[in-house]
Amino acid sequence: MDFSGSQTIAAPIDKVWAFLLDVNKVAECAPGFQSLEVLGEEHWKAVVSVGIGAVKAKFTLDVTRPEMHEPDHMVVKARGKAPGSAVELAGDMHLTAVDSNQTRMDWEAKVIVSGTIASVGARLLQGTAEKLTGQFFSCLKAKLEPGGAAQG
Image 1 (tube, rainbow, N blue to C red):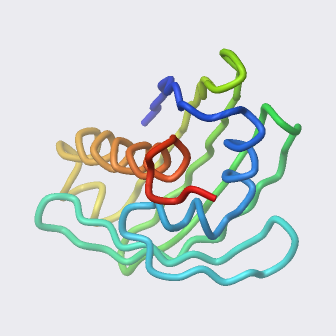
Image 2 (spheres, rainbow, N blue to C red):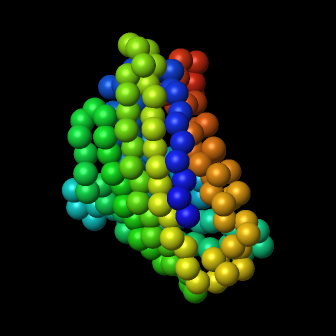
């Protein structure tokens, strides 16, 4: 499955970049996030719980950021397993300063899901992924934009 989109965030590009660099802040916005363990520089183990229809799975993910170009480009890769299922994903993100207080984020992600969760929840995967993406960006904006939860 391929996903892509564009979001405008009411925050300066350097603030958005700093947020995205902080893996703990990003993880807080990931729907279903349960835990994060640092394995090395730009390498983590994350545990995320996902439900596709009636099928629930807890994925243990190996996450890396193999490519970064401050302050406008970042690549994230993850591969993981849950009992009877597997997932592989690659995300690519470009930031553009619209003006001094607005940043546009163009993103794309390629996700491959296999196993039980793919066969049972196949019809629901696209809709679920879109819902989770929406939740992530709502959280990100709440933390970054003026009047959001985390000013400082």
